[in-house]
Amino acid sequence: MEAVVVDAGSKLLKAGIALPDQAPGLVMPSKMKTEVEENEVADGAAAVVEEVVQPVVRGFVKDWDAMEDLLTYVLYRNIGWEMGDEGQILFTQPLFTPKALREQLVQLMFEKFNVSGFYDSEQAVLSLYAVGRISGCTVDIGHGKIDIAPVCEGAVQHVASKRFEIGGTDLTNLFAQELKKSNPSVNIDISDVERLKEQYACCTEDQSAFEAIASTCQPETHTLPDGQVITIEKERYIVGEALFQPSILGLEDYGIVHQLITSVSNVASEYQKQLLENTMLCGGTVSMTGFEDRFQREANLSASAIRPTLVKAPEYMPEDLARHSAWLGGAILAKVVFPQNQHVTKGDYDETGPSIVHKKCF
Image (cartoon, rainbow, N blue to C red; front, side, top):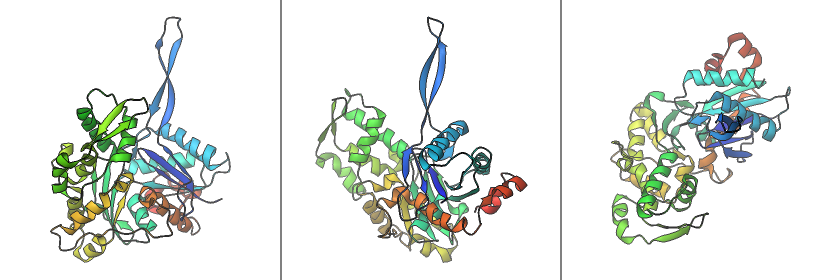
């Protein structure tokens, strides 16, 4: 049985058999619906309501019961595992995952799912594997966080890495606020705002163009599923601009290109050129129209002696690589660690316990 790779994010869970040149077989929301009993109603019966639970918040598992239910659905209902005949599994891990969470995951896999083998690896390393690199720097804009991670010879340089507690969900909320200002009489559901962001959000070529856009932007009307009509103008540009001007989000910090350069500057000087010249953008947000061009333009204008250069995806990899890069890198790694017995086995786990994950997965 081929190994399974799971990349569980705050918004989407990606899972599938480890096929390195194919997109994950399953991409689904990282949500679970649970039934909750409320206070008794008039006839004495308890009212049952559905509640949506998010097991993963800003990259880290927060509800392990919901995570177990979600993985049960994924592995047995979708992947095709059978009770008593479970296979090997590899998980991607975001930057700075606490040791305790890694141990909880390996414990869940061996004690609840009875896997025959386990491995986990950091998303930054895996994303670089997906483009044929073992050294470089990833800028991963996820749903709930931004990770900037320099990687040297397959090892994340944690002392130089940065994590920011903002992401796509914060950009969606910003977009909702801006749309409300220009469409005060329209009530827009946040799920509709998410879809509008994916359809309309884009980046201007530089800050000057953004500041001038208010007088040149052509309004566009959009009909919502419920029939309401909204007008979208300069709001579409503010989402991308917030990544280069965090003050738009109320943050006193530098933009994403500056953060990348300062991160790499904390790595030994002999590695800096290789890291910056192999910069990779990851996450759904980076597919925003104009984002990659704006990023490279800002990089070219930076005061750094070495300018960041973006890695191009190999032609043989699936389209939209940036969205699935960690999963695809995991599929590549799974083809190495399991056949070569570098993974955590059931015997390893029984002998050492959950802490074995820190000794065998790095």
